[in-house]
Length: 400
Image (cartoon, rainbow, N blue to C red; front, side):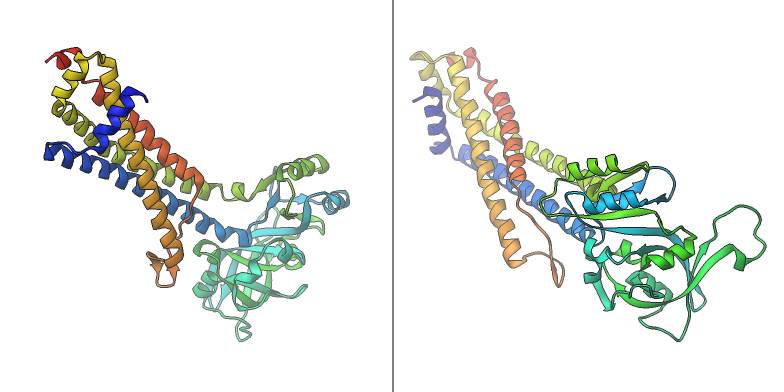
């Protein structure tokens, strides 16, 4: 057995005759355990929060979205439509016309985003599953489905025929406006359903048939602002994206769900990094206790170290003893902390110990990468701390 490792394990697991040294060692080890557990729990919480935040985007965002490289719209030719229909990896696609509108109801006005969709849209997304009142609109009708926030702000309900719900879109063109009526395309519509996804979408979007959006925008029959795509389960996203760009005559760009929510991804990743750095600082502070405990242990074992030196152990061997002792303390403490954190996260998943609301438990998710991040962080910082403490040992100390 390695001499230095054997002595290091004896020093680590054997009680010292000095009770103060024992207490300091316990405090140092406990600090590492608590810091590792806290870091793992926080990272698991952020992983769960990220999934929770992005879960709702899956109801309204497609797997892929084709957008014009320039301008607000593009023409979808018969050739492009045929290519999409026959393309491997694409299950369904839906043509979209989207524009900012003015909604008027009961002398109240509100800016919103109108999304005109065709009959395939519900095969591409699951927005209809988020309807809390009413139902999805019928094809070719003058109906719309609004977000809960919009319905609340304008104070309209479902199938409210008593008062007109007017939609206005500025007419395209140039020149002076001679009348308000001539400046806008408008439709009287009926709200047939209310959806609830999140605060942002609830207060932004209304959905209607693409025919209504085409009329309001004065678009040609094959003119769209985007195409949303549902991929087949085993489809390769990169292959489909490349095939789309190669087959389209029009200059377009293709975005996946992450790119459509890039600001949300960046925010969550930034917050995750900031919290990781904060808890890494906590671990560094905890490791100062490890350095202090090792130095105190060196002073306490001065007599034993002198004996080891006299029977042939070199200064390098004795330094390695305390380096390995500190390394073992931090690595074992990190493993124990991850285990405790793992148990806490599992308990949260099973028994909802912490609640966001009375009916919504705080989301957590166990990821292998978080286990590795905690262990690597603890190991690297622990090795550095052990190296700093063991460097205090010199030949003069051994001889005295």
